[in-house]
Length: 427
Image 1 (cartoon, rainbow, N blue to C red):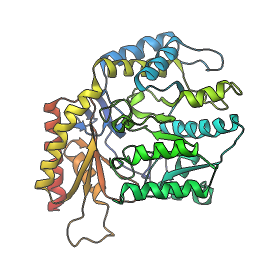
Image 2: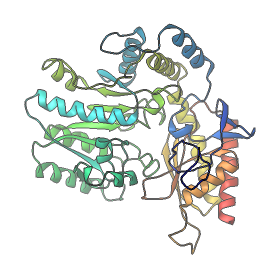
Image 3: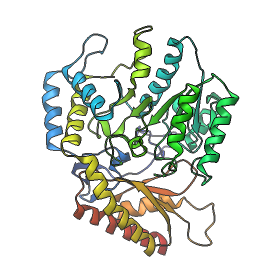
């Protein structure tokens, strides 16, 4: 294909137009191999997705068997046995009453928004607004981006919904002051807020910064007092990644709605879900009795069979507990790197989801390329894939390998990150 300038190029549109990326040929466990034979450690599970690693033989076998049976029916015409198994397994594992299946994390957040809106319509008291944190990212669709402060929001311009913003919980302000500001916002818009949306650990925007202790419990209490819903974005953090099935469990808080994605399909198939509490589900069941939404591929037999097998393995192998143990090892190793490399200014996270905050070399202009992206490129050259933050607020990278990684492989990851840090610091 030829461009208007006469230069040959591919018809493929990528995030960076004309990007020249390594071509992946195969993958196994935590290892990726490109067309030149170079190996890479998947140090971020793709985009915090591949919880079970790549080409897991049991999941590959499930894909093969299900593909030979049936891959697609519309959810309005048929159900499948794996739909019921997956829903029951998810409900039992998370304590949530209902499971609504969609295709991506962004869709799961949009579904959470719609469930909240419908809940109040069913009660006869419609509420049009949501509260969220500006330094957050909830997805790439209109509603999800409107809840976000990520740099991608700029593309929406005036189309972005004008949702109100909560005080920044990552500012270091005392929790009591933060919660007093949340209360003031709820009092300013009485009966208007359908849901408070939050990430237990920040994802792509800040890189694994947890909410301060006491804050989430305070949000839960305020949501109950003002009759609004508490909505957890667990797309990145859910299903064992942080050492619990839901990251909210670290604070002993149960949301009214939770969005899942990424690790639910573990990279083997697109699937996500909105988990709904009994409070919300009962209001709809006793009202209209129907969900006013849906997606063509939502709940397709291939995706749900794979997700059911992924969740079964996650539970049977105790990968949430494993993430806590391996996460302690990784945390210690990253902190040792921080003592060696002045570029690292902070290490934070939970389970196998860690963020490394980075500083520019002394005297470097703010106009220089982001240090997180430069570290990503250096790491790639050293055979390690990491995930830089993209929100426009800070320079950080996420280290979040598959939950199945061995300690020996973790050591290889840290050694390659060490080499990349040395390269960037000496440039």
